[in-house]
Each structure stands twice: as C-alpha cells, then as structure tokens.
Image (cartoon, rainbow, N blue to C red):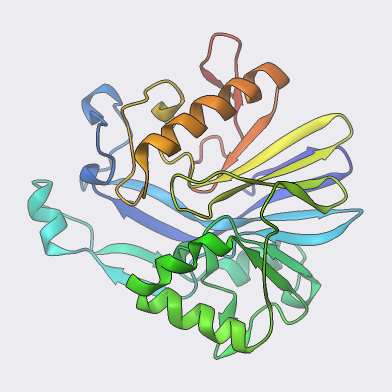
Length: 275
C-alpha cells in the first residue's frame, strides 16, 4: 500500500526503491533485545531504500533519489561479526524507483528538482542512468560540505562526476534558506558534514524530511544509539535532541528516509512516537 500524506496544498508520497538488510552492529549502542520484532528471521533489520515525492503548487519534486539499480551481496565479515548463521543473500537490493514513480502517476520528466539530503549512494542513485540524467528536466541540489566524502566512495564519486558533467548539479547556499515557496533547507551536519533537513510548510502544517539524521526508532529518546556511518556522533545526537524538541512543541511531522510502519511520524507530548 502506498503511503502518502497531505501537507496543506502538497501531497507527499513514499517511493520504494528497495531494501537494505542492516546487521545489528550497524547501530552502535542499540540493544536489539529491548526492541523485539525489529530483527527478521535472518537476524537483520530490514530498512526501506527510496525517496519522497512532493507534489503541489510549486511543482513536482523529489527529496533524495533512491539507491539506483544495484545488488550488494551480504559481506561475510558482517555475518561473522554479528554471529549470523543464516544471513540474507544481499546487504542491499534496489531498482524499483521507476516503477514506484509510475504507480504515483509521475514520469521522470515531470520532476524538476531533486533535493538531496546528503551524498550517500542510497540517496543519489537515480540521478543518473546509462550515463544520462534519469530526470531529464531536474536540477539536483546537495550540500557542498559533503564533497569530501566522495574521495573514499568511488561508486558515488563516479555518479556525481557524471551528474556534474551533465550540468544538473547545484549546491545549497551556506545558510538555511527557502528553496521553493513553502520548502526550506536547514543545514544539519552530523551524519555527514553537509547533511540537510528539508522543511515543507503549507496550510498551517509542517513536515520535515530528516534524511539519515534519524536511523533507528529509539533514537527519539536514547542518545546512546548511533549509526555506523555517522561522521560526528555527538553532533548528530545534539541535532536530533534540538530538532525533536521543536518538532514536539510545534507538532511537526517527521519523514525519515528509511523508517516505515509508519513512514510519517509525530512526537507526542510524552516524548514518544505517534502516527
């Protein structure tokens, strides 16, 4: 079932691209015994790969661009480190974003902007396809501070270099600013140096696309749970605490990149998640 929400004059739809099977060690500080039901029969935590489609008076946009058509085998060292006797075949498998987009009644040429939360492959994968922009009319925006990440990430570097040669890339301005009417970018480093949160505001309602700032449901209340690729755990933790307090006080809806059931969340007055 397609998950979507209305924010004033805008409709936001979750676009599925695939799944990543994360081992428990990917979440330092998390005791999975406290969270029954998160691990599947293989002993991993499946998370969604994909993007968010935004449709409204200012146009048709994407927040992030999925992982692209890829299959990554599950590393033997991950299985050994986590004591997995029957690990899944793949760590990640994706490629369904075009199908999800079509199911929403949108063609790639309908997308005029892609607002990237950060430069990890699972957020930029469909910017290019067969050495051409997959969204032929779209400009893609990203945080300039994340360019340093590409040095140690050859697949993402190659994709971004191709996107740059195609002339579709722009960087966000240094400070928080309005991208389109009702859409504001906020620089929130921690997971990566250039990580951003995108705010959508319309009709008295607000929604935050939080990218990978939030990776695990219990990070709402547990400051000791991190993610293995956070470049600055302390900075990410402080950002979550600051933003979650504001989201609770203002009734802002949270749309994380990888969490589902529900895909859109709100923080109750007692500090717990609510749909």
